[in-house]
Image (cartoon, rainbow, N blue to C red; front, top):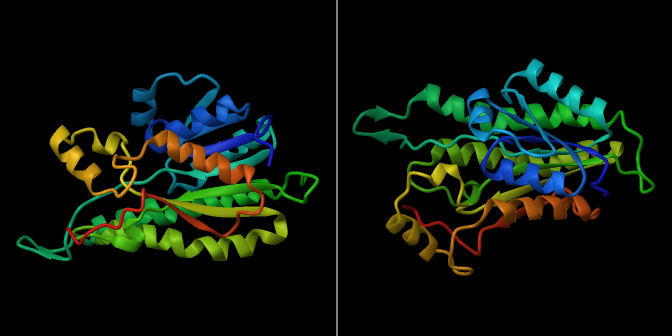
Length: 251
């Protein structure tokens, strides 16, 4: 699928995986709309070729308005779901059972938010003219290797990302008749702002567990894979691990 002269929507677009993706798409000639919370947009400042829009992925009206703005600028052909949150908490600990509201929040942002953007993005894509191969667009979601290798204390995060993995094939089949592809990237340990507070020793410990390359992944590598999925028209309904062959230990 051609990336230049299309509109692309990226959630979590102000930093991390989303920030790298909006920059890569803009460099390829797309009109890029990055959705994020106002606090994240304020920290990001101006990004060349990128329009940052305030939107909570769990809010139907905010997401619909942002997608309509993107679709009015150029044919909407690509949506990338990068927005997400991570928390730690065991099912049972010294302080009692896992906080139910926190579990719901993680599911709401990571799973329901992804689905909200997917469904509204697909609605807008379905209104565009198909290209010569009958394709209207591609949606790339973000899971995690925690979906497969959830560690102690990751029950909420692993459940939310497992849901993203599980919906991928069904979503691709649902949207096939519209010429819309759906794929998911499951990253390993990526050097994003979520690791900003980690000291160098712990960072080195994390990197040492990766078989090869023995380092943390880079947001730019995620962006490169997302654009490769867009370029590769026969990739559909697939979950791709991007983790250096890492399989997480229980702890």
